[in-house]
Image (cartoon, rainbow, N blue to C red; front, side, top):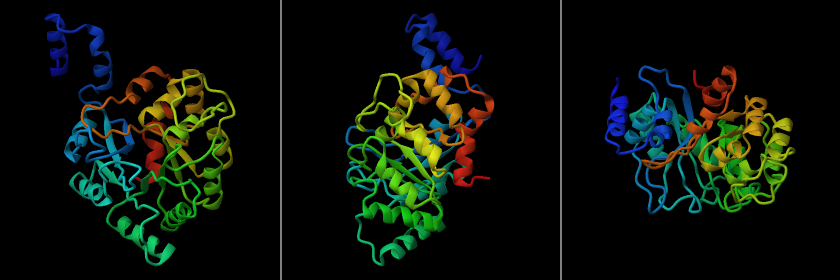
Length: 312
C-alpha cells in the first residue's frame, strides 16, 4: 500500500471523512510509475489578483508531478484588464530556465504599448523574446476589439516571427460578437499564424444558440456553432480546454462534447489555467467521464501541443 492509499484508509477507518469525499482527489492523481500524459497549454505563475495565493514555479512543477503533466506552458499577463498583478514575460522565461524540461515560456506585449518602429519594432521585440526561449505569444487578453488595428499588428508580428498566439475572448477582453466575425477577420488576414482559442466567449461559441460571449451556458449545445464553422474554413484556428470555460464547453453536453473532441481531435489541446495553489481543476474529472479512442486522447493530451510548439 502506497502513502496515498495509507492516508485514505486511515481517514476512512477513523470515520473522519466518507469514501466519496476522496473520489475527485484520488481520481486525479497518477499511480506510482505512470508515464506522464499531459502537456498543459495554459498555466500562470505569480499572483493573479488580490485574494489569490502566489504560485511559484517550483510549486507549479510539484503540482504537475501530482497530475501526470510532463510539460506546461507558462503564460504572461501584461494588460491591465487581464490581472491585478502583471505577470511579465521575463518571469516566465526565468522559470523555464529553472525547469527547462518542464516549463515552456510564452511572451506577450500590450498592443497599446509605445513601440518604436511600428511593425518592424514589434517584430524585433518578439524575435528577442524567442531568442531567449519563448515559444509562443499569450495570454493575449486585451480590452480591445479582436480585430482592432493595434491587435492586428500583433497578429502580423507573430506571423512574421513564426510563433502561435493564444488568445482570451469574451465581452471585455478580445471583444467579439456571436458568430465571431472579428476573429474571422484575423484568421483571414493572417493564414500562416496559428491562433489558439480560450475564454468564455470562445468556448460559448461551440453552440449555434449562443447569445452572449460573457458567460458559461448550461443548456445543451445546438449545432452550427462558430467554432465548428471556423475550424471547417480555417486550418489555423485551434482551441485549448482550460479553465471553467473549457471544461463547461464539453461538460454541459457530454454527448455533443465527445463528438466534438473526436471530430476536432487535431485542433484541441489540453489545458488547465492553473494559477494558484489549491485551485480546483475540473479537466481531470471531465476526461475521466468521457470515453475516447486512445489515438484521440493522445492528440488532445499532448500530440497537438507538440506539433504547435514544435516539441521534438
